[in-house]
Length: 312
Image 1 (cartoon, helix red, strand yellow):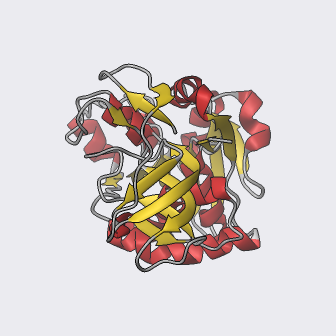
Image 2 (cartoon, helix red, strand yellow):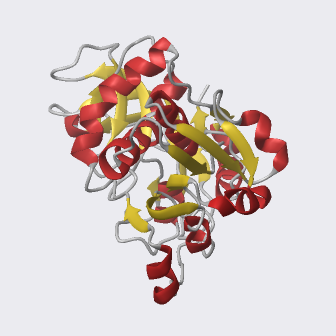
């Protein structure tokens, strides 16, 4: 069967033939229908992350598929593959079939499209936890969301709108404005600083990170808060403490590793909202042969929504 494996840290994955997994009692054999590509995959493959599988390893921390054999699940059951060290401590999901621990398997509705099933968990649950558990968003608030055309940013904007907030979504380039979710005011990053000079917003949800983070917190009024989710523009920021104290904006981190149990609690309702069309997740599909190119697009911030690979 085909799989995408990393042979060296910092290198691109190689699509190659590997032995098929055999079913083992007590485990679950799954045919993978779609496998997600994530920034976590890029972080792990860089080799400096705190968790990394032995080389060579099959990448991929998330996928969806159909059960072929299991002790407790009927063949044909549609499932999400996530957890159990997949792609972090052992081979992941970028292969045509996997045999995994039941702890890594969650049943999903059969009518949830495979590409959505493979990629919905992180953006929807991260957005929900960031807004409702960390920021505690209230109806009537003015919320600014950076990276609003990304998977997490788009979901934050949609959920904030549904919660009764007025939402402004920030895009990196003007040509992305037509991709801003319905009901959200779009604005380019270059125009945002001038527009936000009045500091009327009470909440910033930042998916960008990097050195400009502190500057973006000044879009929020004193006493407001900035929830930090991502770091696609860089992993470091310098804080001038006197200025930060004067600005009086709380920096709140979203640690989804610690929030995994909460994420699993809210995932079923979020799946239902995707099925009804209340929430929309944009997905870009690639053949597994295009995985290196897809990862580069992801790294450069040029994927609309989430990226998945298929093996058809």
